[in-house]
Length: 426
Ligand code: ACO
Image 1 (tube, helix red, strand yellow):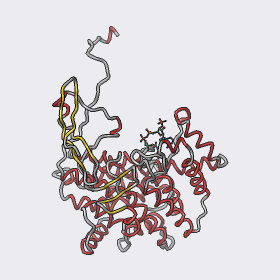
Image 2 (cartoon, protein in one colour):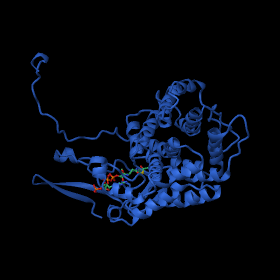
Image 3 (spheres, helix red, strand yellow):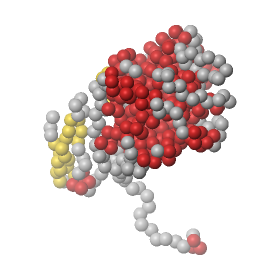
Image 4 (cartoon, protein in one colour):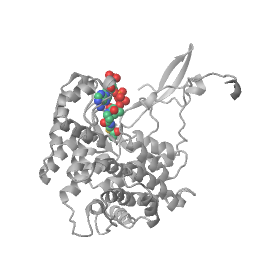
């Protein structure tokens, strides 16, 4: 590979170093571009911008490959636990048995949330969206752990707190929406059973965690755990680059994830499938509407991806898991058939084929969440619980790499200098 790239601007030639990642992605290093040429680059939506060098997740959108720290997503989803994967993402290696035990036990001991956080929670309207509540309460955690911004304290301790408390906080909104009492964590339970117990147990009867449900959730959380520099992760890194504390940075990531074009799509998918069902199940009508998105304003949620121009490997695993889980639980969900019909129609339609629009991670995940008894407005919260270790790993890496504060440029297109007109003359 050439080790420099030549650029001719205004008749002058400039040279920029090139670099190559460990999986052979190639880049021009343009950090001196403006100093040398007076020009900046314009790249709306950062479609061609490598904002950092990272050793956490490798993604090849053309080949449909996803790996965390070198391990394939297929291997991890079928062989690991979510907390093992969390450790791998955050600390770079799979834990030894001893490291794993210490990590899991520390998380166990921090699941309880300060009772004063409950007072903040009680101030939210009963029907507040759980993503808004989650982001706000994670942001509030920096007030309860002020060492996070007064010199940053013990980062490992903050990491444990976040992993331990996010599931506890997440269940509060759901319980209150039903008018049920919230449950305290039970630290004799493992991470996922503990979450399920807080979600579904009632004080009036015994609740037993179904291992099929716990295993399905383990796979879903692993699939969501990291996805390199997507919108929410870039947000976490950008916020953290100002030396903002870990809670504020993760809270910003949760807000970014909530958007319907990002993690919020999993809620939109189920609502869309329900609409199609209520409208008589005519898949072709909705395919046509999506093909005319410019006039109808309708997009097929759960389809398309900024970087996957081939099948999203996570969607393949989730589609199979959806079939397995529904079979094992004996759930017959008519929207699964609508989803399969939509997928088949889209994969055979030139509009979707030419634009390389395939189902993404959000397309089938909602169907599984629903079969597990998780309500629609909690789907993106589930995504956030899964993505948390990825955000943490990226935040930590950004800090360790001592990355400069994120500060893009712009091409100004507003008014040029004009004279101020006093109010009485306007
Ligand atoms: N339905 C119909 N047409 C689509 C869709 C879709 N879901 N997605 C993209 N297109 C079309 C666009 O209209 C555009 O067509 P054109 O070339 O005729 O103008 C073309 O495909 C390219 O689309 P862009 O919006 O430029 O692609 P981009 O990479 O910017 O967007 C995105 C990716 C936002 C995910 C998009 O595909 C989308 O809106 N999908 C639906 C929302 C969704 O499922 N989001 C979840 C993504 S996964 C995640 O974030 C966890």
